[in-house]
Length: 277
Image 1 (cartoon, rainbow, N blue to C red):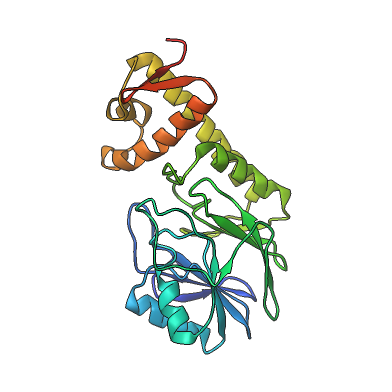
Image 2 (spheres, rainbow, N blue to C red):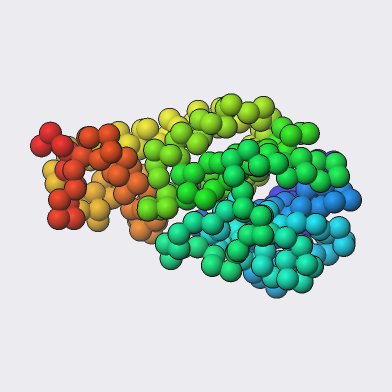
């Protein structure tokens, strides 16, 4: 069945998916909300506070929702949590970050996550894996009984993740991608898009893509000389539709910050150049 907002899909004996009605260039078909468990249900990434989506979550939970878990606090993933928590009297679990104007300020967790935190239900256990990069409060969650990892915006099916400094960090993102290979992951349940069955293959593909884009940033600076972000993005992202260049500039800036930390580039007066120029 194709992904469709408002339709509950059974992915496994313990996992159901409900797609929020917020499709778009950055969200694909919409944000994936997952319901984990049978008699003791955790809602993972309840998504945007759209009334009809909230009603579908509560209806699908059938009085068995015991907690709300968020991978991170971007406004397409967590705002429904506070609404549902207040309505059902259940706790919110997640982590906070500094408000960089891109965060859901309504999300104030009752339980703060740390790396390795365990969240257990009647027939399931989630292990929190700290995966900073997309933003510094991002966590993935491994459903240990099935080897399925809920990846939020760490990995998306069908598009690459935007890294937004200062909360986003490209060096941390690449390290966090590779960290997933330390766990027995059989499949990735992304925050957007369909299930990804090959974790190792997907991680290796994404790391290659990021390093190739980084090399293109360096090559672009060789071509342009000292350049602003606006001047550089049309060279580095010439394979991406110009309507997405404002988003692309954010990830490009994250690449430049990483290259600066690695001693390869320098920023002066809003222009970036290779450190050897």
